[in-house]
Image 1 (cartoon, rainbow over the protein chains, first blue to last red):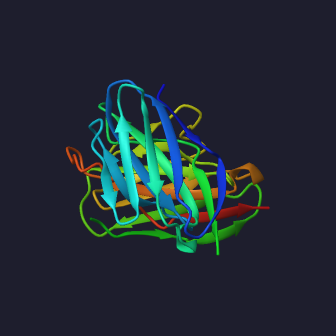
Image 2: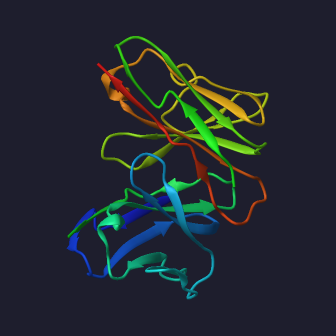
Image 3: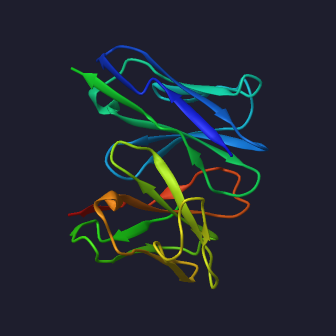
Length: 111
Length: 116
């Protein structure tokens, strides 16, 4: 059974801080790892990672995957209050398109 | 990308009743999934909705409790049957295209159910 563990469970920072969110996984026939941001109900897609060591970047957010150690990190620099959300990590195996989600990290950015 | 409409957006239900959630996509999609997110929890896959055949349920979920229909490539329904307060959750429809290696799974806006 595929398994995804995220840490920390929650995090409170102040605007301007840099945060690192962690995601470790166990999956049979790994295909990809995805990061989502969930503010209200619907998660919105951030990144998909398939190869080790290649950083994906979008503005202040970046992510990297380590397939040897089976983990990924999501970095957010110069945090803003609008970054407050739950960040979800999910993995997909080669069996299909469904995702196995981690428990999420709840990030709160204070002014 | 896809526009996914779910309804109802939210509802308050009485114990013992059933509610059907609809998911409409603006384009034909290969894969449709139903997820549940209980309060303070992450997303858990309920089932894969298969067009024209019975849904494929994940461990812990059964058809009698969560009957699913998918009559065509753009529409699916999830029914939460004989509801109890433990069924209070957000239910999310999601879609993907088989062979789509971009990896993105699109989500509907979710349906927040509260069972009294």
